[in-house]
Image 1: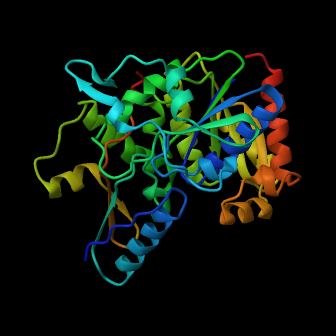
Image 2: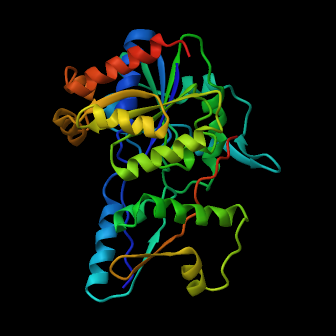
Length: 103
Length: 246
């Protein structure tokens, strides 16, 4: 099952996605949660807390800044760049994050 | 006065920006109100009642080798505003820049950043409602502003977004950056959070059912709820930043 959650800002996408992921995890599914927002907050909704959410965003950003190397496979990517959330949910930040680029 | 409103989606950027634009127009002369959000909302809080057709037509843009997206003809920002902006109440002129009608060439709207940046007309203010999140605001769209207004609720994700925006705002050292806390439940927590973020707290807007009702009907808060606590608080906010010469 692959679910995409979309909508206007502030509609509750992230909150809904977090609850859906955790609920599926509790029902025994292995869940991969992908944060595709340029302003990634899904970690907070999954219960990972502020620090871990920021750490994941920083890891994703380090790829763009070429401070880290891309993983050669999807599973290795999730291993290296993901985080374990409660209820067997694995979270990874996918989308390229803002880089200060005025002009 | 040149103000850019930024913040997480749903924080209330459009509501505050639209109300500020109307007040500025009443008190200080014409206002160019820019909606740079691809999911537009500013037209409602300005009191236009609908999202007007218009904005700058995509055909004005072309891609040039080594220059990226630019305007095809060298036309002044002022003449484009005269031609394409839609007149709203109180001397507000509205320009939709983020809307993507049908198929537009990806990236083409960046040609219009220069319009936003270079528009200067004596006596006019500019109010920009920028796209939600953190990315677009700093892809050049905020550089017109002398003040960056970060709007946030007191939620963790809203404040995390505010912190990211504050960090990015450091790339605009010439602009003053401040925080407006929206839908607050008392002033104490807002002050504590602003201090934690190391930002001046420019306003605390209370949670207000009248605002929610205005949002549901697509009307401007300043028209349907002029005496509501939020509109009054926005009035004080505007007074505060106009008295401070920065």
